[in-house]
Length: 133
Image (cartoon, rainbow, N blue to C red; front, side, top):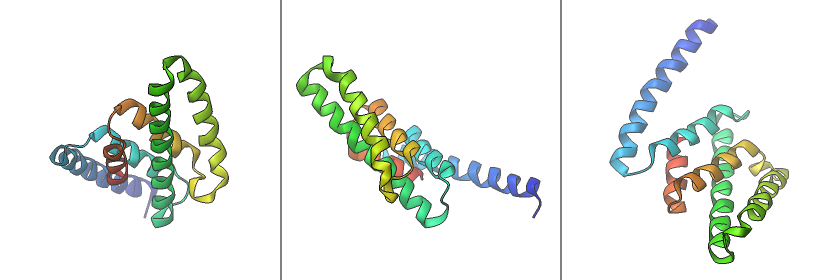
């Protein structure tokens, strides 16, 4: 298969799946944009297939959990600590990459950004990220 044909197949399948996701997210009352972040993680991770999907979702979920913890700590400690906590979470997101399952640092940051951006229930963020992948 030529590169052009392969790219066309990828573009077509991505377009169809993106349309399906946008519809499904609406039906499930999930934030569609978060699902697209999950898809972005899968496209960007160097590992493909089930192993890449698992590693990408694990990285996304870890980011959501770190961000949720930061939100809770900031709420109880006060907004003045937000910068310090953000620095600590950024350190943790990088340091955890030593574990193979959490080795895709951009995926962890994508998960954290989704949680910070949604400012909602972490479970809904995780559902949208995983279903979007």
